[in-house]
Length: 350
Image (tube, rainbow, N blue to C red; front, side, top):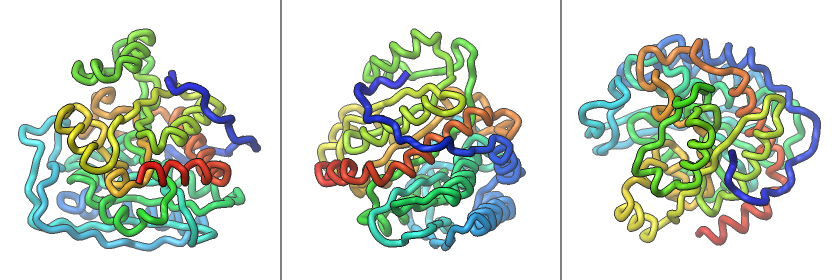
């Protein structure tokens, strides 16, 4: 279902040994209880320790990056998919990002990130234990490969309050990055007709996506890739890699027409529906000029368990989650051939 024409050829090489069973195990550990530094600190700390232990055992060097922001208007991390008042004022927020590297620690890097925190009272299997599980499986499979370029894995904090963890990491690493992949709610799929929603306002701006959905009877059986012009190549490569996995995963690409800076902010003001494309950590990297893509199952537009206590490990599709992992790993190992094209996009974008 990808709607970008003439993508570059896929990388060659042996099949990537992703394990759906390992992914299931990671989700079960991470989503054993809510993970929230304000409302569920015990579960939050346990999940962070679990991720640290696995990354370290896989041979990655892990550091903790403190996150602290003050006097911010963000979004509420209270329970429920549609809170009565979605905004919240935070006098002070603190958290911890996990940043893992292996091999080369200098030079241009590809960052792959997923947020670790959940909202209050939700175990957050899809949102976003699924994304962190992909990170942990990537740590295993990439260890078995000879990475020619620098890859960073990051479990980000404070996404549910407004992407503050990503903001801090983007400020630190932005100049070192050739690209960023955000894994946001990537485990829920449905083959039932009518299981995928697309807001009416979005349909008018995403006419090709709306057409594809209608042709597929509005099934939620695909991964969505959100990108800007600077990251089009990354989106194409990820979509092509997903189609070539052991169990091919359908994709839908959505192009965000905005650019960084005043013009982008003005377009958001004129077309507020575009702000829906900012609803995860990739937006903070866009804000500092880093080409980024977001991979998502579209969360609330598909998953009836979004931000609810019923967002549990048994609701996820681990075969398709394995395809997400394999496609992301393919992008990581193809970073060598991609660097020149991505660097050109960075220069154009900035």
